[in-house]
Image (cartoon, rainbow, N blue to C red; front, side, top):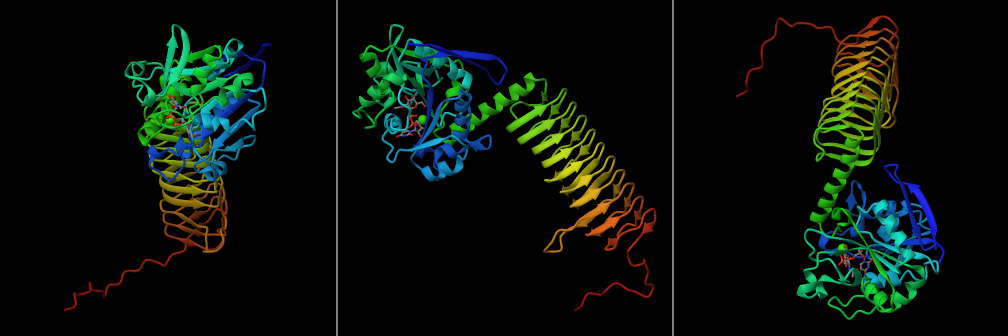
Length: 475
Ligand code: UD1
Ligand code: CA
């Protein structure tokens, strides 16, 4: 047999390398089960972890191993699963009746490249990492089958790994196990590697004479041992990594585990988290030095935080970059925005898509911005809506100012040039331009362009009616 050596860098930039049988690798992800215990109309593998389907997480880990083929077995809710997984290079195999994990793999035989080694992953075991799987590939130098095993706190429900001395001899499902077998602590994770030259023969021997009347993938082990094949086992150090999701409680436990993993990685980079149990990273978060994040923040999509950025409690930040020295105060929502250096936003601000804030901009409470660019040193401190606006630098927007950008049909633009001062409670009816250094008196409704450097006001003059009395109550 020829051995090959492959190596690559993992997420933490450590070099991982492994030997394998010399045949290309095919990966099969089993995802046809209904997941009855989720008590949901949605197929189990489409339930989300960190905002993405469980199956997407498994696919990510599978791809990191650079397999020659990546197959997903679909059955229950097959159309929904196919529609949700649109990335390139996935092959779907239908399992019309769910007759067991072994039956699921049997459905793949025609689609698999003959001779390829086959790694089986479960769509409901989403925390598995590529660098835990990689050492399994090395075992095929000596073994025909390799299992990923673990020792959960509570083994109830899992298949038990039986050994004769050191050697793995069989897996027995919980429902088929004797009292003595149930006392075994080593369990099957569901992840199994089968050497390509043994696949067809081993799958061909599966029967369904067992407690559940199913074709168990796990029976491959007994058949391999009976044929004189060696079966290897790799034990996962952290049992949480192979925890399965069968009900909502397990899904929440997996979410907590994922959260902790992401938080630990951030802290390892030097980010200060006020409470690592209260941060959710549902995408990519890049952070500079001395970043501080208070409790209950959610990061989605791609977020980049510069040096010394501080994020207050209860912020939701999605697809945004926030440059060095900026502070996002509590209860702020930021979505698809670019924020400059030394900016302050919030508390209670809503920064919507297409917002660009220049350096040292100040956005205060109850301010909403959308599709707007605010130049350096401009301030919108209280209760405003700024939409479809081009704002220069050094502008001051008074409390309660609104850009009226929508006439019910079309959106129009507001331009506010450098150095403008807008008095409180002003409405800027777009399209409109306020020229450089203009001042607008409070309470104005501006419908015409405002000239530079002058004071413009549009409001009725204040009068006092002397000859007036309060209305009297009618009888
Ligand atoms: C399985 C293992 C058990 C192991 C446990 C780990 C078998 C027989 N048992 O049990 O030893 O300890 O996982 O979590 O393999 N699926 C299909 N088609 C089917 C049946 C299942 O695609 O016909 C898929 C499911 O969608 C799921 C995975 O296979 O992603 C596992 O199925 P599940 O029924 O949850 O197996 P367990 O009873 O948990
Ligand atoms: Ca399961």
